[in-house]
Image (cartoon, helix red, strand yellow):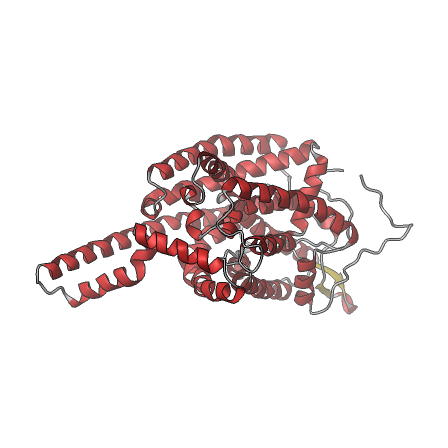
Length: 472
C-alpha cells in the first residue's frame, strides 16, 4: 500500500469531523454537493484521527466511571500506587494531547474541504453550514441525553467561526492559533485573581460583622456571591468536596431521568459561558493551528521523513519532561483548583501542543516507513468512522457505569478502567475495517451525511466480479 492512499473500501468518503467535499455536477456543469471519493482521501489524516480518537477514551473513561473530581485528582479514584501510575501515564501521553490533535485535525478538514471545492469551482458555504448545524444538533443530543462530556457541540461552535478564516495564509493561521492559545493566560489568571479578591472581601466582611461593624453594601453583595455561588466551585472545603462527591455517586447510580436532569444545567453552562471563557481559546486555537499545518502539508505526510523525525524527537524530548514536571507539581499541590488557577494550568495547556506534535511526527513517520501496515490501516478505519466510534464510547461506557445499566459507577479503579479502554480499542480496531469493507459510512456518519444533503445516502457497497478489489 503506497503512502497517501487508503485501501479502496468505498466509493464514498465516510470520514466525519474532517473534509466533506463537493463532487458530481448537475446539468449545465454546475457543481453540486456530494460526498468525496475515496481516491481523494489522505490516509495519514485518517490514521492520525483514529489514533487521537482512541487516545481520547483513555481520558474520558475516568469521566464515565467516576465523579468529576476524579478526572484531575487521581487520589480521589482509588488513590493507590497503581492508580497513580496509570494517571501518570495518561497525563504524559493522553491528557489534553489527544483533544489537541483531534481539534487540529478538525481545522485541517476544513482546509481539505475548501481546497477541493475551489478545485471544482463549487461553493462550500451551503454544505458546510448544514454540516455544522447538524453537528450542533447531534452534540446537543449527545450532551443532554447521553453524556455530559460531549465535545461535538464545542466543535460545531468553533466551526461557525473557522469558516471565515479558511483562505488565510498558513503562517497567519498559525499565528492566530497561537494568539488564541496565549489568550488562556489572562483568562485563567484573571479567574484566579477574581477568586482571590472575592475571598479577601468575604474574610473582611466576616471580620467586620464579628466586630459589630456594618460592611458596605457592595462588600456584602460580593461576599454573598462568593459564599452562596462561587466558593464551592473555585475552592470547595473538604466538607463541600465530600458532599459533591456523594451527590454524584447517588445521582449516577440512579435512574436515567434523574441523571438527565442533574447534568442539564452543567451542560448548558459549558456550551455557553464555558465556550466564551475558554472553550474557543483552547479548541478553536488548536483548530487554527491545524488549518495552518494542513496547508503546510504536515498532516498529509507531504514533508520529508527527516521533518517528522525531528517533530517526534522535539515533541517528546521537550513535551514529556515538561509533563513530568507538571505531574510532580500537581502532586505537590495536592491537585487543588487553586494551583491550576494560579498558573499550574499552563503546563498542560501549552505542553499538550508540543507532545501532540510528537505524536504527529511518530505516526506519520511510521506510515511513511511502511511499518506496521496492518495497525495503521486499522487506525485509519477507526478515523474514517470517528463520529460512530466516539458515540459508541459514550453509549457503551454509560451503560456499563450508570445506574440504568450495569451500575459500576465509582467502583472500578484506574487499572480496571484502563483494561476496559484496551478492550474497546481492540474491538474498534477489529470492527471498523470490517464494517467499511461492507458499508460506505459508519452509521452515525451515514445519518449526518443524509441530513446534510437532505436525502438518504447509499449505504452498502455494491461490488461485482469486474470491479472487486483484492486487498491484503
